[in-house]
Structure formats: structure tokens, C-alpha cells
Length: 65
Image (cartoon, rainbow, N blue to C red):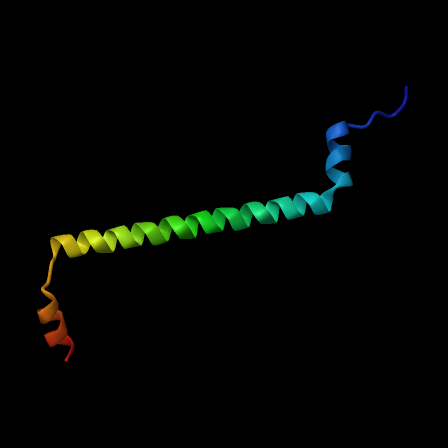
């Protein structure tokens, strides 16, 4: 009886650089999607807050000066 290798172990050790590259792209894509979703959510939150707490533009300018 010969020593049998597990094919899944052989495939993963043959291409470690490809797995690392794939993992890096996954992390970058996940980060990009998260940043985009956060930006959109914060923008929507700001618009909603302004809708509820509407302050006239003239009042905003007076408070700054």
C-alpha cells in the first residue's frame, strides 16, 4: 500500500500566492463596499436630520458671523 495524498491539500499548497492575492482582493472589495455603504448611510442621516430640524439659511449665516 502506497502513501495516498489528499488532492485538496496538494492544490492549496501548489498555489499559495494565488490564494493570498485572491484573499487580498476580497478584503479590498469588502472594505470598498463597507465604505460606500457608510457614506451613503451618513448622507441619508444628515438629510433626514435636516428635514426634521430645519433651520432657515439666514439663521445659519447669522450664527456663523
